[in-house]
Image 1 (cartoon, rainbow, N blue to C red):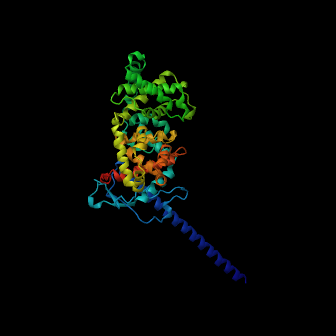
Image 2 (cartoon, helix red, strand yellow):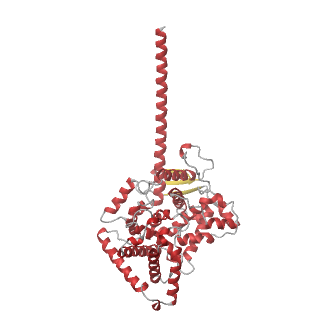
Amino acid sequence: MNNINQQGLSTKGQQQNQNQNQIQNHIKSEASSVSTLDSRFNQTLKNVQGLLKGRSIPGKILLTRRADPIEDPTLHSPSSGRSLSQNDAGTSDNMHDSIEVEVQDTTRPKNNGSAYKLTISNIETMFEESHKSTMGARATDSARVMKFTKELSGSMVIVERLRELAWSGVPPYMRPTVWRLLLGYAPPNSDRREGVLRRKRSEYLDCVAQFYDIPHTERSDDEINMLRQIAVDCPRTVPDVTFFQQAQVQKSLERILYTWAIRHPASGYVQGINDLVTPFLVVFLSEYLEGSVDNWSISDLPPEKISDIEADCYWCLSKLLDGMQDHYTFAQPGIQRLVFKLKELVRRIDEPVSRHIEDQGLEFLQFAFRWFNCLLIREIPFHLVTRLWDTYLAEGDALPDFLVYIFASFLLTWSDKLQKLDFQEMVMFLQHLPTHNWTHQELEMVLSRAYMWHSMFNSSPRHLVS
């Protein structure tokens, strides 16, 4: 009897060992599958990102429309409460079944090029997963900080490399230096940088003394009217941030704007330019003030520091607007042209919402003009603006055209909602968009779609031709 019991226990022990081995093998298999998926995902994401940023990819990328949904549950985040609609993915009936983007690798024979086939929904999911996994850490993780530090510590900054890094966000304490470099205000040569900034700041003070610090009797009627309009607009600038309600802050804004307007007579002052100064003012003040913007007091700084900050804001604003001069000249033709491009892009990406807007008689100029005029500063929470501007400034001279893709992505965030609204409801909705609770996650998704659509449409301009 004892032998039988021992045999039974031995058999039971063998079965348990077999079960444990099966479980371990299953776990290893699952881990291997996840690892393979992660590896494939990371490589594909790098390929798509490389396409937009100009890196060489062998062969071609074929973006195809997929009729059936993706069944692989591992491609979707279980914690995600939001899934991108087909409209988000840019798969309206007006699009061709495939968009082919060919990128030659000059280091290999043509017949050896590989080909990647990615569905649009796949790419959207990849961007969504990528941004969710790095949300809140992208601009400040140690690897990125090290890359920025390496680029900034050399005797000569390679600005194009800095652009590639800055596109995805700049560590906040590095923003002042990075923004000056991206705009070409500070020279890439570190030996010349301090001297150039000192000279430009002194030049700004001379301009203020020549144009602003003079009695009204020495101004023309147009100049007096312009100064009055600026004085009216400054208190209206970012009204929900108390910092900008400080009298000394408004005085700094007034000096910057009036001096810029006098020195740029082709446009003069245009309402909306006051908003464009605010990201610069906050970023350059952050070199001297700590904590939340709401707790800042500009009076804590000595006058010479305030003058330096104003000068940096003035020159960076000038550099920014030099790339979009016709946005603020008479009738603002540059903005009108981009609004038309936005309308065409939305029609190609999301034909149903485009048709609904047209059927309701709503013109894109009625809501998108302010977006281009103020670069979305009035549309999103102010604490997200500097992150958005990292991408703006990284685009450099290409910014005006890339704005079309950002704003299309921004608008189509509410594609399903817009199709349920009539004219009056759409006007009210678009004037008071529900972005007050937005975090970096929503902004990153807007930028991701813009990034993707730019890689698709900008390489296939025929898709934007009627």
